[in-house]
Length: 307
Image (cartoon, rainbow, N blue to C red; front, top):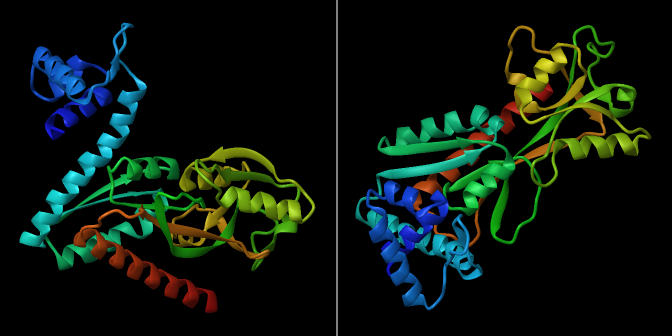
């Protein structure tokens, strides 16, 4: 199969029309249409349903699009591997991560990688777990860092770090001076919780812990990012549940964050890569650096807990 034709077909699907794809490919529409006709003749299938006004894939077209992306990604990786064999010191690493990873891990990991290999370029995409996993499966990033718990046969996951959960309390709250909090002490409170876009996460852990203690939490706000939820707490809207690393931000006005002692709940950050997928040495090096950065934060957690 001609990879150029396949790339053009994928571009048509992703742009939504032949004309837009032709513009993106810096060519005119008629040659692109002729090329697609030749591809269909070569494969002996119809790729597009041409009965309506909108461009629609046939089932064969949908199959070719999904498998074609894998084939093109594999070919691109082969070229990257050849380049690495030639010099091994230049390239790029693409990471998709949730906000907390971009705050606590990525800056230090990028710094260390740049110190080792100044010609390495980092590309970071920030978003929720569902977005990160979609980017990974579509071969648009090399590594994902997510917090939610999930199972998938096509992905390989490993725990990067485990963090205790803290309870963020609004100003003047009766429990604000407590050294730790029991989940039962929070009955009757209004909760501000992070919504899980994929799999299960902090909210599911808290809701189960509350129910195990004999009450159902009254959730008044579902958020996607920690800082906006902290600001909601500061405004007195309710209490929230925060991963330990956010205690590092000693900013004026941030709510008091108290350890949750009973039950002791934790949240995990996970590294995610594609199963059985070639990883360039640059990506492998960045994974090792990120794990070492996480180990440093674990030591800091232990030291602070002991003081």
